[in-house]
Image (cartoon, rainbow, N blue to C red):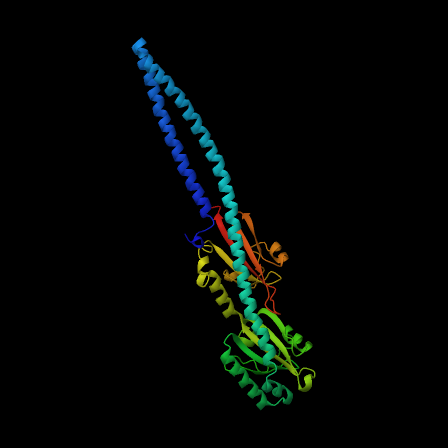
Length: 357
């Protein structure tokens, strides 16, 4: 028997089935008791009618009476024991089922964050690598329009190979976009990003460090939800940064892939675990929902579930909540990080395991 295809609650279902069968057997014993009791009464009546010739009937009747009393005592004791032990078994199986479900959901949540961290780690490497591209450096050094156009073409070549990016932008030291990789799709040239946190941080760091801004809508790419990574572009001999390269990662494509994975496309063995009403969210360190199976929750505080213990945990875990809607298992996994990168986010899985309706 392949256990991964069974829900933890199967233990309770089997216990309930065993209890039902035992109770049925007790009822059958009591039915036999009633029939032997009738036979005992009939034997006593016949003994009384037969006088001294009915002595044998009386002995049999008395023996039937004793047997009936023993059967009655045994069946009552068995019924009471079944009820008590079944209750204990149901309670134990219920606790175990919630533990197994909570632990598995927590593992899934941690797996989701591991996928995200590994994926986004590559973005932090990309921005540091591409910020050294000679065409980008030259365009900012000369300030020439032709050089900027060549840098934009180079960024476009990169984008042809890395479809996960919405766009790449080359920004001068004043925060003005001088070139972008997809000018036909996004007319960001000339726009200012001087107030963007990722740009400000990229100028303040060394050329081999990167800056990051979490999920937000960017006017540079038609208000798509993106993650922004920035890295300063240094001039000759690593002098004061000439500007920065910004890579605008298409968050929507990653979240679709991750949600597809966690809802069973790749995790086929967890279809049973996730078959109950389940909400899956990616939440940042402040409790803001970055991605969710509840579309209306995205961009808002995750107030659909109490996150106090989640945000304080800095790890993975689960809890069982009882509310008006029924019993829920809330499981979470904290960003484990990969190499030098960690988002600091959580995956939270909120599952209704029984309803009070």
